[in-house]
Image (cartoon, rainbow, N blue to C red; front, side):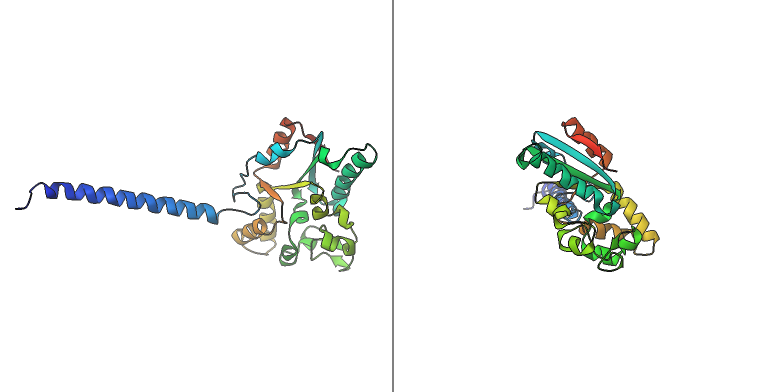
Length: 230
């Protein structure tokens, strides 16, 4: 004989199972969205890498350079001078030095891969010359691969040359947004495509932060001295 109460439990049971399935699907979708939204070098697409890396700055002499313009590589040469002078004039080993370079504004081409220099005509857009090209650069002349022939820097003054000595490079989401607007306005791609390309085309090891002014403040709060590079 059929239990008349069976029908009373059927709908709630089905509803409960449906909720479980829906919740699982929601978690899966959320995880997929986060994975798709991740940017290179440990940063999220919305620029929240955290400050764990700052805890690694334990050198006796710590500085952050504010680099808002490429100035044909002058700030990079000053970064090398910082390391060299402490070592050669004061006998300070590099393990006791920490240097961070905050790249923002018109300096952004410095930390972008060669492919983006060609695609977005960065040499033309940001007025960077290349001796080998005898005109606007179509490759990143601030990397060791291109520095010597580009005529602006030596390989030791390049981004990756400095990274080998422990220098950390930052770029901020506001700068990514500004470059996106600039390059899109120049007819070099839709804002969505340009932004994705910029985030995906950073040089290895370059970290993304939400806002450079906040990063500067956080670093100063940790005893890292701020220097504006002119």
